[in-house]
Each structure stands twice: as C-alpha cells, then as structure tokens.
Image 1 (cartoon, rainbow, N blue to C red):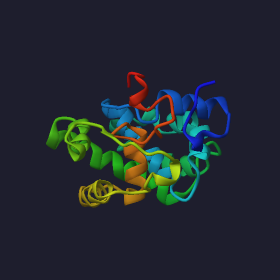
Image 2 (cartoon, rainbow, N blue to C red; image 1 turned 120 degrees about the vertical axis):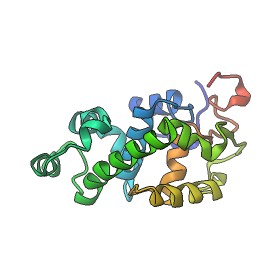
Image 3 (cartoon, rainbow, N blue to C red; image 1 turned 30 degrees about the horizontal axis):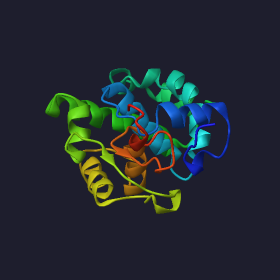
Image 4 (cartoon, helix red, strand yellow; image 1 turned 180 degrees about the horizontal axis):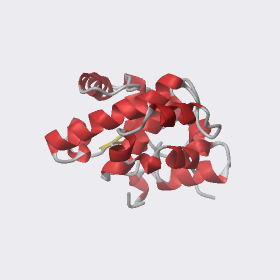
Length: 191
C-alpha cells in the first residue's frame, strides 16, 4: 500500500481520492480556482472533510461556480440557498460567494484571467516543500498573508491568511505532501 500524508489517516475513499489526485496538483482553470476559493472560505471554522462531502451539493446550489450566473442572484435565490440542507447555511459564507464572484470577474477583466492573478503570488511556479512530518507544515506563510491582504483589498471575503494557505495547498500553488508520501515530487509522480 502506498504511503500517504499522515493527515489522510481516514481511509474514506473520497478523502483518499482527493489527496491522491487533487491536493497539491497545480490548477490553472479559472472556474475551478474560483470554486476552490469559495469552498475554502466555506470551510472556515469547519473541517475540510465536511466541505468535501458537500462539494457536489455546492456545485449544484451555486451553478457550478459560474461567476457570471452567481453575480445575478436575486434575494429569492439567496433565501433558497440559506434553506439548502446540502451546504453550510451560514448567511455570511453564502453572501461571500456572490461578493467573491463580483471580485473574481473584476480580476479577470484587469488581469486577463484569474489564474494569471492568483499564480503571480508564487511567480507562476508551485512551491515544493520538503516536510518530514505534518507537524512541520505551517498553517500560513508570508505569501498567504500577503495574498490575503491583496484579495481583501480586491473585494474578496473569507480569505484570511490561513484560508489562503489552505487554498494554495489545494490548488497546487504549494506542494506540502510530506517526503514519505508517494505524491511528493521526489517520488517521481508527475504532478
């Protein structure tokens, strides 16, 4: 059996698949980058496992995270989202998706793509760390703190330094697989 990061101790197939195929893999698709930013914000104060289990519900509830549709949400749509049992029904988190969709579209206009903007924080290259244990992995960094300040300045919500670092890990801007994990680049797995 392949060695994995210690945080994936739960053998839930959905979690294992997320770890093996998504976490730490560079993402450049604007829609998916936006989706992950919203989901990381929804995670605030909760576990990623909670959000991961609800991801398909989020995709259905929020029009597959198509920002152009989300910015047009009416009060009635917002009310229906607050009643949607398949997502976290926190009013501020739900509102943040609409707020973030507006900011996201503005960033696309200004930078051509959201990917260009977000990847500029790491000079368009993933940061590959070499942690021996999960205890060494930080919850934030200078880059995530700076990213947080910029995102907030650009109109985004639920984008604190810790959320930004978790986002960077999720979309492969940072590869924090531990050295013993088969997903770490040192094991020759193509990411």
